[in-house]
Length: 272
Image (cartoon, rainbow, N blue to C red; front, side, top):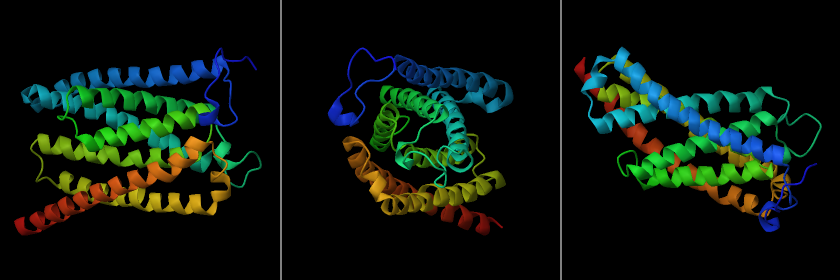
């Protein structure tokens, strides 16, 4: 193996002291591709929306920025949701019944690419959130993105705990429903059937992907705690701290979604 020119911190990365330059270039290419894709989709969202949605031209500058921003967040969510689902359920890499290395130490070129791509997205989105703060989101979004980047970054460069990172990334599958709700609201379609159907999908999707999945996440960690303990030190403690924080945030947001869902359903029934 070609050694990387400088050693990585031993106390953070456990038994990994040097990384192949080829692997580093792969990581960097994945991160920059994530940033580039966000820029491209941001611009395409504006141009396509201008052609396909008459109301887009009437939006304020701030609304157009958020509209386009939600375009690339939706694109990222779809990519990572399908890729994570494939890696966790269809790929042999993270098949618990297959022979090989410990589950917490398994990686693949695709999983590395996906994690790097997600880092690129979170960098792009967080940069916009901070630049326009608090127009695109408050401190809870800064915390969410910060914790996500922190966990993904160390899992990527260390090659450990990617199985659990992919489970958390799959929870991004609820993002398209969140964004569609905002789009419909801005478009003046809050009383439409599509808004109601999307609300149902958001409620059920959040329940499955961000509540029940996290319960499975913690149960899986508990059952496989003998493997979890072998994750590099910072990664081990991060697994004990970051997912619970994200879970609390998910429960808080789910409570708000549930309140809005009940309000929308009640309003729809009264209108009949």
